[in-house]
Length: 215
Image (cartoon, rainbow, N blue to C red; front, side):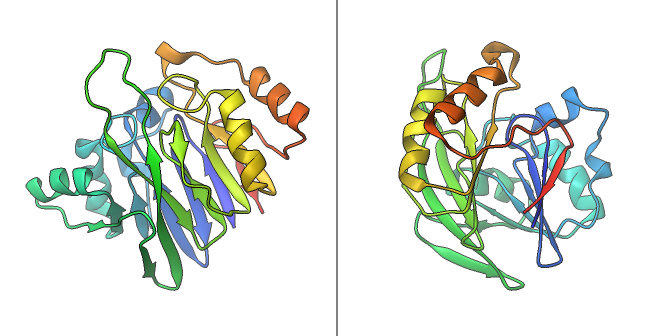
């Protein structure tokens, strides 16, 4: 499995000859010299929730000009896609689906309180092929065994480093990769992540933008 990190919570996962794109939101394009049309040969796109840093409809339309992916998401995002004439599959927590021999399971996640108030969005995490767990934005999530966990750690709308460590101690993954710390409103020093992981003796890797790791 090859994992490539992009800003905020976006990852490209290459597994079983499939290319799986997770949460290609607006920050991906504002933080990098990257355009939606640069994505090629994408087989599956996963959206954890409707916030623009995870789901950007206009950039998705451009991605779909060059790709014919299966889109898997939750009911809220599916509704927006349906209004735009885009087909998708809604997956519920604990539900599984299979795309070309790659298994996807929905994982219950809870978004943290919004800084300006209002109702937090519905969030769905994903367990990919029983190996890789992407939690979306969450302050509370089902504890699903996984070898690798992509874990949000900005400390406001999702886990703080302390809470992330508490969660990971119960999961006991072989590797943790932090995400969701690129919003200028939630600037976070990754050295804080490293210290938290090291004190808890949790294996981790902090990836630079567009850096890949093969596991």
